[in-house]
Each structure stands twice: as C-alpha cells, then as structure tokens.
Image 1 (cartoon, rainbow, N blue to C red):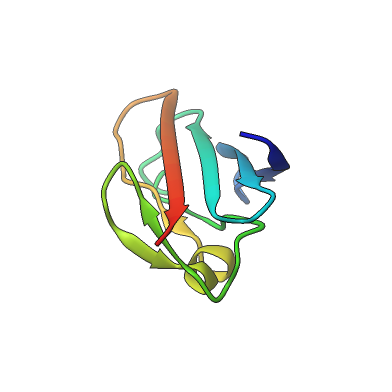
Image 2: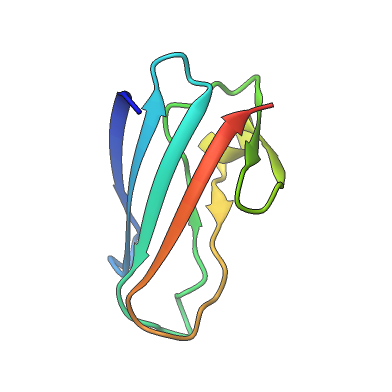
Length: 95
C-alpha cells in the first residue's frame, strides 16, 4: 500500500507503532510492538493517525467497526498478552 507513514510511541516507551494510511484514507495497515510484558502498563490504547474522522472503519482481523473519530482521538485498545515481544497487526478498511 502506498500512502502516508506514521510512527508513535507509548508514554512508557514499552510499545511502538508504525502505520500506513492510503492516500484516499480508505485503508490503514498498523503494526504495534510490545517490548516487554508489564502487568501495570501492558494494556494500552493507540491512536491511529491520518484517518477520516467522519467515516467508520472495520478491523479485518476481528470484524469490529470503529468510528474514525474514535480511532484518531481515543485510539484502538490492544489486548493484554502476558508475554514479551508481541506484535499486533491491524488492517482497517472504510465501511
């Protein structure tokens, strides 16, 4: 996919995210990396940059639908996985 590339970090620097949003903002591929498991901070929410706030998006991995405003302002929660070095792969498409 070609588009705009974004990078983000969590406040505790235990997570990092890379995402690409298509030029027309209809698709997004995001990868979030958890470095080490920490029971106090391993459950995080990541904003997805560059999406259209007025549109809804479907996560192709879970079929959940999120509002663009929710994804850009609040973020998408990642599940609590009790192991080190976990990768979360998100594929979002406009509904």
